[in-house]
Image (tube, rainbow, N blue to C red; front, side, top):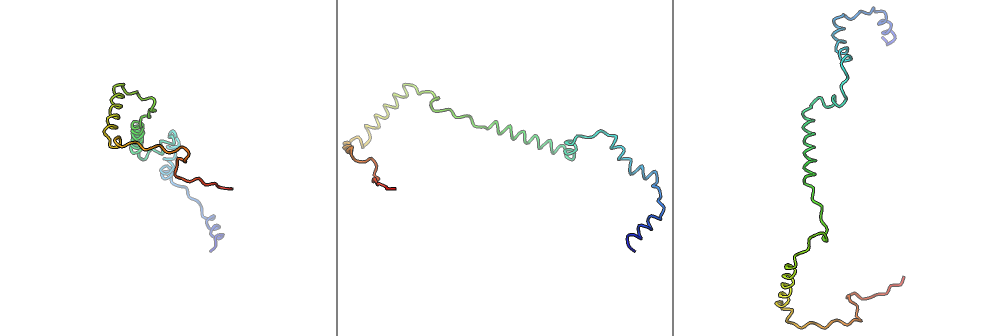
Length: 130
């Protein structure tokens, strides 16, 4: 039997009506849903587990709050720092002078300065022709 024959036999069979009780049972929830106001899309998306989504939102807010609370303070420039007291500067200079007097290098005579015509680095000068 092919499909054409099947369609002819099905067309010859009289159609029966669905019982009213069945029809109401099947189509009733759809009618109720049409009458109910439409729920916002975000509420439908969050509805399966609202407490889980709310908990996740609270966790993210806590993370942002801790991130901004732990942000490092801006670094002040060196010039903006307060100058030390004059007594501190005097004590520092006295300490440097005392360390210079007590160091063994101060007992040795100073070496002669290098002549001015010598280059200051050890690297030799090389001329490069391009």
